[in-house]
Amino acid sequence: MQPVVASSDPRKIVHIDMDCFYAAIELRERPELVGRPVAVGGRPGGRGVLTTCNYEARAFGCRSAMPAFQALERCPQLVILPVRFELYRAESKRIRAIFHEFTELVEPLSLDEAYLDLSALNSSGAALAAEIRFRIREQTGLSASAGIGPNKMLAKIASDWRKPDGQFEVRAEEVDAFVRTLSVRKIWGVGGVTAERLAALGAETCGQLQDIDLAVLHRHFGKFGADLFELCRGIDRRVVNPARERKSASTEHTFRNDLPDVEAGLRELVPLVVELLDELRAKHGDRAVRSAFVKVKFADFHQTTAERRCLEGAPEVYKELLEEAWRRGGGKAVRLIGVGVRFASLGGRGAGEQLELFD
Ligand SMILES: [Mg+2]
Figure (tube, protein in one colour):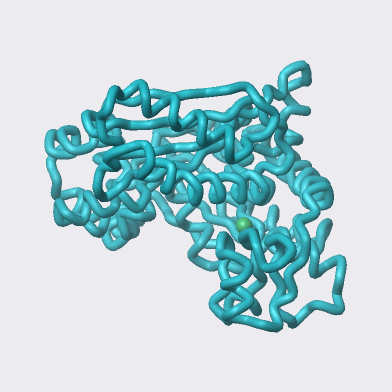
């Protein structure tokens, strides 16, 4: 008889996150830099942002997404290396092959992170995670951290707990205690603005959030309110989806005070576009762009998106798209601006091959 996993058993979801992935690969290729503060990213002349820093650089306060010039102020001896996506993609592919020795249920989040659903396997989630990390180190010389839990949200939070080169498990019976003191910022989908609105309702931890009625959450957050109600209790029903293909990338900002006119909008546009371009460079350097778009949400919560086909989202394109979207509001103030790109489809390839783009 085949052992059967009863549907009431908790799932075994593992989130694997490579440690300082790009920097770790570069250091493996250049052992003479080991022990020195190293970052990957930036552009010549201290422009651009860092994508990854090793722990030596972090000790100086350098962080990923930090402008390179600022990192150099904190750590003048910081070695900043150019990004080499081809190399990282090749490494990512080797790691994904290791995942697939365990299960087909692998959902990559980026080049260096993935969810695995190991519920069908007999060993414990922790033992399997340890084995996966061992094989990654053996075959690539790189270290990974892992989180193990009954769902994606908890597994992802847990992978941060023993970083680097460690793993942490949240068992089903420990979920209540684990989430109670957890910051609401750790909840999947909660960004800075939502966190501030939750704080205004008296909820800074998931335990405090649990005290808020579903109806109240619904009134304040719409459909997401129902998600919040479950997520703050450690309930996350999302499945690990191997076929997921990222279709777009965007950056948006909700303004504390509504923007009165398009001139004010244009002033806010530049930092958003810079952030988007840096993110594209850092995380999606492997994807071809199909179009650029600007989303505008007006003070009355109506929203509109202006979009144009192009192979590269140049800053002038976003300026024109913003003006177009703004005109549609007929003079209304704006509370949110988003800028983004849609990626060309990975179509025409087999499903297995699509995942090689790791997004
Ligand atoms: Mg990582």
